[in-house]
Every structure is written in C-alpha cells, then in structure tokens.
Image 1 (tube, one colour):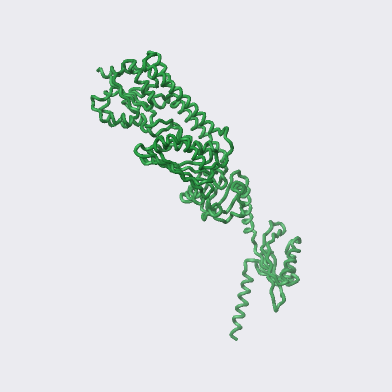
Image 2 (cartoon, one colour):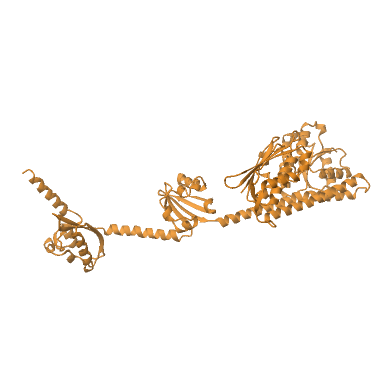
Length: 132
Length: 474
C-alpha cells in the first residue's frame, strides 16, 4: 500500500523503508525529510494520489510533527478514512500519547524502531478499515 | 480732664483681668511676701484674702519646694521673666502640675515686685505623659520586631526608621528622617518599590511583594500598609531564600532538560541502532544493503557517543570544573583564531569575514570559552548561509563606558523566524533549519559560555536577511 514517511533523520528513513519492504508492507514508499514539503505534497495531491499510511516523526526542526498535524486539520474530512497516520517517534515522553487524542486522524503512536509485529498489526488495522 | 476717665477705665480693665483670671495670679515683693492675690488663687488654696496678704508664698507650699520658689523669685528680681513647671504635692492629694511664670514689675529701672501666674496643667501634663509613654512603647515595639520597619508620609518623606532598617539598608536615621525616599535611594526612583508604594497609595490597599534592592544586592520581602498619615512598611532580607529558590528552579530545569535529552536525543540514535541491528540480521552479508546498514549502524553509535560527549561538556560548564580563573584575553586574537579554524569551509563557500576589533581590546574571561563562542557563531554562519548570495560576516567590538565590551556578530545568511523560535533559540538540541545538518548544540554553548563569563547575549534575525548576535562582556 502507498506509504509516506516524514522524518528529518535520513538513517531513520532508510531503516523504516527497509523494514517496511522486508515485511512486504509497501512497495511504493515516498519519504520527505521535512514536514513542510510533505504538507505541500498532501495539499496538492489528487484523492487517488493520497497515501494509505503516513508515518510521522515528531521531533523535527522548522515544522514539528505536531505543527504538521495542526496544519492538516482543515483537510481532515478529505483525509479521514483514506489516510491512516501513525506517529513514529524515538521519544519516550508520556505526554506525546496524551496529545495524540487531539488529532482524530492519528491512529496510533509507535516508538522507534518499528518491528515486524507492529508492521503486521498496522497492516491488519488498515485493511480492516479500508476493506469494509 | 478728658484723660482722667481713660485712666480709670484702664485701671478697671487690668483689675478685671486680675480678678477674673482663671489662672492663679498674685503679686509678691522682693522678699516673697504676697501683696495681692486673685480669687482663683484664694479658691485654689481655700484661704481668705486677709489670711494671705503679707505672708510669704512659701507658707502655702510644701517645704520641699521652698528653695526652688525662692530661687526663681531671686531670678525674677534680677529682671528676668522666669518660667518653670513643677509638681506640687499638696497635703493628702495627688501632685498638681503647675506651670509657673514669674514676671518682674519694673518701675523706673528697678524691680518693684513680681507677678506670679500659675496654671494648673495637671491634665495636659497627664495626656502628654500618655503620649510620651505610647511613643516609647511604639518605639520599643518597632525596635523589637525582627523586621526592618519605616514610616513615611504622603510626600515620600521618612518619618520613622528602626535600627534593623538602618542595618539592612546601611543608612543612619539622622540622615534619612525628613528626607525624600527617592532622594535617599535615587536609583530606585523608577523601580519596583516606587511602583508598589504608589499602588498602595492609589488603591488604599496593603501591598506585599518581593523585589531586588540593587544598591544593597539583596532581595527584600516587603509589606506596606497605607494610612492617612502615609505608609507603614515592614521588610525582611530574603536573599538566601530567593537564591535557593532560583538555584532549585535552575536544577529543576536542568533535570527537565536532562530528561528531554535522554528521551529524545539519546533515544533517537539508540532506536536507529536497535532497528539497524534487527535489519542486519535479515540481510544477505554480500548485498549492498548489508554494507549500507552496517555503515548506518556505525553512524548511529557515533551519534550516541556525540550526545554523551555533549552532556559531559554541558555538565562541566555547569560545575565550572577544570576552569582556570578569569584572565584578560585579547579579543582580536580569539576572533582571528576562530576564523582560522574555519578558514577552509569559509573559503569553500566564498565567505568573507570583516573584522572591526580594536587592537588591545581585552575581555576578562577564558580563552577556550571565547574561542568556542566565535567558533560556534562563525560555524553557524557558514552552515546557515543564504544559498543565493555570498556569505558576509561582520564582527565589530567596542569598549563600553562601564568597562565592559560589546561585540556585534552579524551575517547576511538565511536567518530564522525569531518570533516563532522565541525562547528556544539558545536551547539545547533545538534547530531552526531543516537543511544542513546540525545537532542544535552551537548556540546553547555560545550562551552557556557567555554566561559562564558573566556576560549576556542578544539575538536579532530576519528570515532570508540575516542574523545578528550582540554579546556583552563585563
């Protein structure tokens, strides 16, 4: 399934891409090193170009993951049901998971690194909602 | 004939004044014998006029006072008006306070006799005594409270100052009583104390505040109560308390920062390393991906090490360990050394540094810190230069009248949104550019090093125009 990675850390992007490919999660993976560019992409994307899954890092300069989610709110209705956003962060701060409640588009928060169990669970979750 | 009537009238007027005077009035000769006494005196003594005339005044007074009255009489007979207060213990009664005036009657240059006027001031004296007692009591209270205390009137003049205030503010009451507070402490005229007292006066409400008294380098906890007369102000030295609060606050924010570093900056390369190790296990050792993954794993462990080294650097600045005493450092040399360290990247990007640092200008501090400050500022300037134009950096230093040094460090680089960055500019691991890599350590170190030398740093920046840092060294 079409997947978008947003992470300023290039090693992080490399790792997530390879892990997703290893698990056969996605063939088409687009990655952005800045949330600003990812936002611009989503804002001009046609509905059929929208990714099914977005992995979003939180701790990024200029536009953080939270800023990105706030900027995306006007588009929430178009994205709901099409885009499944997962926060993928290395941070262990407890406050992060509380804050995800503010954003209905966020389906879950995962601590890096991704492992195969988590990847399979996400696939099952996305298939379940999209299949119906 | 016409002037007879006025003389008679005049005589009567004075007689009337004598007879109806509520004070005790009598006339003595030089020997002290009473020649005339008014009805008030006779009533006071309970005597008839006939029994009084021709007798010495001292006959009607307790023996203990005879010497005093005779002495005063002699003084009056020498031609002086005499005034004295005396407590007269008439038999079987509480002492009566008399205010006595002896006025010599001069006839052709000699004393013909003495008028004695005595007023009963017992009640007045008692109430004055009460006032004196109360003032004494108040003084005892104001002196015995542990707070410093002063009173001032509505024109800002000190009317009372206790000794704790003298001690705490290093003033002497005889130098401040009656003087304008802002004349005594001119440096506080536009400060917090003035504002708070003004507020108390205007609202007629008590105020309670803590403020820094710059002249004495102390924190004071102040309570001020307005009244019609002015302001009663109690205050205490809370410098130690405030300093330990500040220290606690600093340690708390250090701890928060430490938690943040552990949860974000230490965790990020560690999470990558964990994932890469997992990935490595599933890759063919001869594939290109295997090589790449291994390389990333190495990079991640190096990042991990870098964060730990940063933490060590930060903690050693905090602890001020291994730091020699401050010494005068030639500013131009420190700046030139930093430029030299970055000569290669500067040349590569075609950057130009214009120095305007007076030869011989010294900063009191540490050579290593100064090098780090200019190295980090210059390295940032190179890293975040504007791609569209050649980098130009201006470093200008001036001696300040107060003996300190001001250094302006300006570049024409990409700048950043200062409003958005706000307080984060100098925070550890905060970054404001998504382009070239940086850990977010440079400006943190600049600020930490400037402050470790007792200075401060200010920043101005405009997106796509450039950034200016102004450093102030003491």
